Amino acid sequence: MSRLVTIATSTALALVLWQALVTLASLPPFILPGPLRVAETLWASRALISHHATITAAEVLIGLALGAILGGLSAIGLASSHMARRLIRPMMVFSQAIPVFALAPILTLWLGYGLWSKVAMALLIIYFPVTSAFFDALMRTPPHWLDLARVMGANRRRLMWYIRVPAALPGFASGLRLAAVYAPIGAIIGEWVGASKGLGYLMLLANGRAKIDLMFAALIVLAILTLCLHAGVDRACRRWLDGKVVG
Amino acid sequence: MTAPPSLTLDGSARIGALPVFGPLRLTLKAGRITCLLGPSGVGKTTLLRLIAGLDEVTEFAGTIAASDGLPLPGRMALMAQGEMLMPWLDVLGNVTLGARLRGSPRDILRAREMLARVGLADHADKRPHALSGGQKQRVALARTLMEDRPIVLLDEPFSALDARTRAQMQDLTATHLTERTVLMVTHDPAEAARMGHAIHILTETGLEDVTPPSAPVPRAVDDPETLAAQGRLFARLRAPA
Image: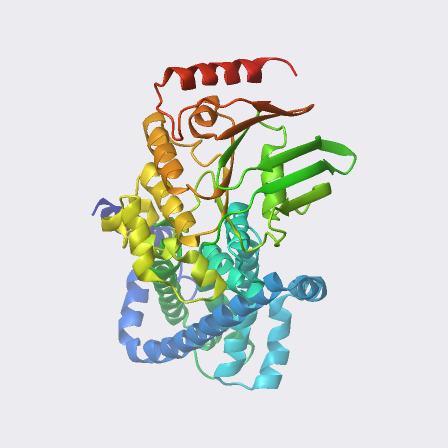
């Protein structure tokens, strides 16, 4: 309960500071609208905003799901094979040296203006953190568990499946928590580069037309979407991944 | 389970240029508990891991062989110190881990029987975090019994337990591991005096045989002869090599 009170108080404080800044500096609404005005716009444009938010949410969720699956499989593949580590890891690190932002235009060219170029952006931005966190955990199985399993006669495949993977699930979970925050960034970049739908598109459109209140309304919805996603992923991780090991 | 073989390790081990233990010959008598006692860092655990086929760093020159001439892998069970239970499996899952890792069917009935033998019949569905330290160790023992191997390797299994629980575990282990060839590595003279049919001290210079007390294993904690043996072992451990 006290946590809720703290959150409510700090939100109220932020809103008061925001309104004070607007009032004291007498900023015009097309530079920075006050929270009340943004709230009015949010309510008035709720149908428009929720339509675009649904698109962005879909891009993010599909990207997150694909990123979790691909990242998970890649980490297991890398952890299983010494050869794969030597051949593929340098490639993965190199790919991280390319700013994902720079790839957005080419992805739009390849995959079109629709959903999939944004899904690909979200996936690209989360693939490395998920793979890396899970892979590191897979390589750090407590040695006494490996000893026990070897004496019991486990082959490499069963050692991976029954010991290394379950022991590494908390690492996978921390990768997914990061991914929940990064994935919306990817989707928004994709929408900025070229889209006809989505919160990123709406923000760019509102900005261009000096509808800063609409821009802020979309931004707030995006932030809430990200927070909800993170909270949901966190809950799921606690329920299914961390709990397996920590108890 | 067929009659357990005896096992002999004969040779020396080193890591690069660094000797771990000198040329020595250790025989584990068939169906007996052999205690290997020594200070930390003298190579006891290395020796056990060499027998278990786990050591990939140490270079061993010599032979490790069973008296029946059959290969060792697949005929050993390991119980080591610390958290040996998989926290993501319940007690029953932990006891049947070996079958799962070998891809063979899990004998749930027998697993429950093993749990009953260590007094944990009612805890089969619990997760390890819901158990006390002593209970966890009993699950590890039930799992070792479940493996049903003629050779059992114990690597300081009870060093993290409190004195009372440790004594209980020693009783339980000695009672259930009869008719198996057991190597127990320990740094505790009291444990060696209670548990060992044969007792050896590993030092920097080699292996020393110590005459064990005459009482049957597990010996009572307050048996005078056992206490005297414990005292001698302790004095021997403290003496410079």
